[in-house]
Image (cartoon, rainbow, N blue to C red; front, side, top):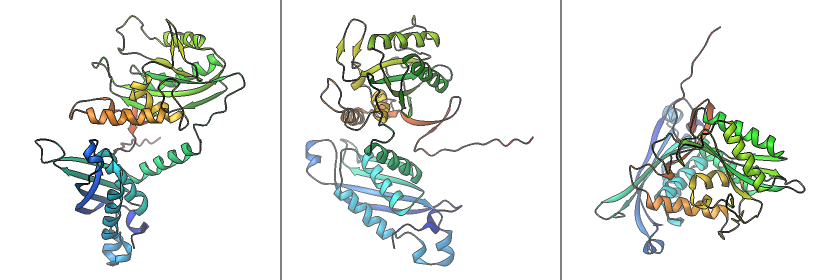
Length: 353
């Protein structure tokens, strides 16, 4: 018992099975004492599934063993050494959804006396099995160099570009920009990242941005590529007279051009701010092979992304919007999106002819 039971993990009912107040000792936290001394955490796991099969048959073999799930969560938690409660919640939810086939799971972790003047810190997340299946597939592909592996043409360089838009139909703007870039650079290969909805970080009184990165193989030199990017921005209607970092139809930045290290009055490569921006590093790591080095920082792009995620989480102010609030999205149509991994209600319209 404890293996995946299809009769109770699929169906038309959304019942709840709860393992509550599971007390564990874990290495979790960012302070030095927390990295060596185990602390008490209290965990609730809520599994959403169809229990009609076992409730009608009263057959223990047709449900999930609560005791087995509890032991699995306890084992995972006590063996883990996470910095963040968010990461611990994520790992527990992934274990429950993938190992036991649970369609949806809510994990709540309490850490007593984690914050001065407060009884405890609490993090609660809800994730789906489909989310973790997609995550697992991305990890497998990236580990094998799958979708991010590009063949660079002879005499060409691997170039990474960042794109952003927060005016009009942002998805259409990004698609058009990619088409214009590929045509103008005669790119022989192209890889595109996922899309990310990002709160504005410099001028905050403007709409959120849709951000992405692309990787192209091209023989165009950096200065010619900069002219191409600026021409595309102008042709698409970007107003260069507005305030810096304000709203824009399209923004195209050159992040890296091969392993080039270039500094001039008009262009710096690699982009001087890229390693400081989570909204750049997340999509960039979608298209860059694992272990790709930053030409000047001395770390891989993956390491930079992880450092940004950690530092942003530590500095986070509850209730305030910040770069960690960006979410990966799936386009539906126009400016409508799904947020990946979030609970979503989809409204459909039926038409008859």
